[in-house]
Image (tube, one colour):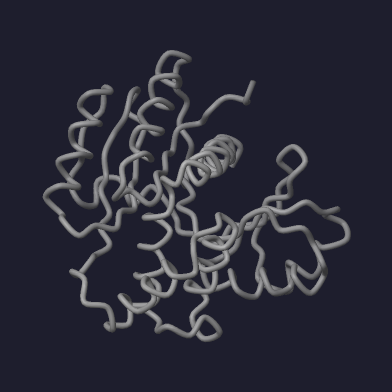
Length: 240
């Protein structure tokens, strides 16, 4: 997961900057809306909503925005409907790209995605052309001594633990996200991030030039308002 972890770290650092500029608020609100629509407005019974609320508070999303987003998801708000969309494509060097989007206007979103892919040496793929190369996994990043938490995490459903610099990356099936997070909370571990991620089944090697071009493309895609998350199967080199 080394390349995947590098892109995850880049995204996390960029999200902090975006939040400081206020650019992340709309994405956070949309995630809350979709989570509330799928599982209801009670975070105690809806772990996706609970995770979305935790992230929203981390980035200081105003409480009024949070309440409006929940109301919209539960059908109380009168705004237009939004939908989750997955787009699949290819970047420089043939790297697979998967985009999780939340949009009020499907035509606008696909137009923006197609334009960026074409502009940066990629192309939009057909439905099913890329998604099979990824597994959806619960991924928790934390700062802890693996020897002190390993047994508890394995009991909570962890499939793999990997040290990534100063972080411990814990991977499990999607349904393990809540028990893993609750286990770490009970242990007092310092959780850096927790959520569902698209983990590539096999990472592919790219040339240095293609890696550089791909990173530019991924960051541009992340900047689109309707794009919630971008994933790739490219093996990215160590951060400098």
